[in-house]
View 1 (tube, one colour):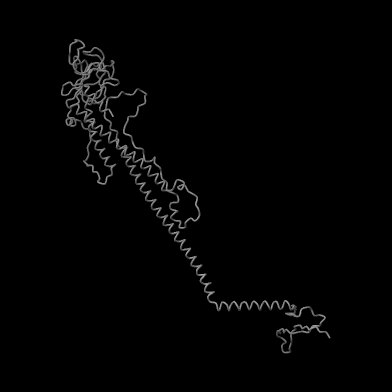
View 2 (cartoon, rainbow, N blue to C red; view 1 turned 180 degrees about the vertical axis):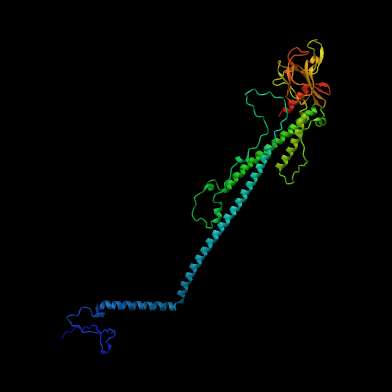
Length: 452
């Protein structure tokens, strides 16, 4: 008889009353012959299939399940009785959450600070730009005012007319300020509004833009301010030069009238007035006017005085009656008579000239004589008002007639040698209240007026 243990197989148990319904499989030991028994000690049958499991595998599975169960029970027991571990885990999670929220709050605060700084910078930039624009507008209005000032130069000697085809040289006048348009034109940055709309600060290094290359917006504003400073300095210098020039000319004209012994009041009252009129609107200088406006006001007042003096001086014969180089062949005063050789009074100046040279009026006036007059030969006399008159003798041709209104520099005749003359020349006289006075006194006054 064999000592091997009997092997059993599982098979279903049937009962008579279980027919017609599903039968539950019952697993039970089945005796298996020793010849068909395998090496496994355990066989599991399920739905007609048999699975043989060796004892080693069986016990490994059982041991593993037991260990896992024991570890789960121990862990549950440990956490059940160690609340401080859970508390620490929960506190750690809370600390991580609080740190994350603090970091978010810090980033939000940084964004707000950056945005506030950008808005403040934008506001300051707008204020500076507005100041620059207002200042530029002011300088443009000043440039317009300076450009509107006419060049009131004193009427001096009668100049020689330019040759035909020759270029006319520009007259020297008060320098005009350079226009505002040649200053730096500022172009607002293209990202001006974008900087305000963007609420997220740039965390990465940005490429330098055009304004960063120029040194920033502040440098651009600074350059604009410097350019406007230069324009303003030129305007102030121009205004100061204009005021000094006008004051100097007014002083010279008043001094010339005083040196000639003329009555300024009589001259001004006798000066013909141009057709003009309109309602009287007094000029009021605002109390808040800046130095530029005050200086411009003074210039307007001085210019009005100079305009009146110019109209008055147009009646004073202080200009030369001939053009070009002047050569006197005989002066005013006592001289040896060219025909008799005896002392005689010469009542004028003799200007050397060639027959046919033009003779020009030395001041505005009206012709009172234009005919042959004894020793004068062909002679023209012009009344300038206020007792002032001039005579032009020895003419070869007379181009005017009695009653003609004469303007400064108008050709009234041609040089000749008519009358009591030894050769072609112009005999020129100046008279005050019918008495002959030295014409050089008037000519020297004209030289002083034209100086500077």
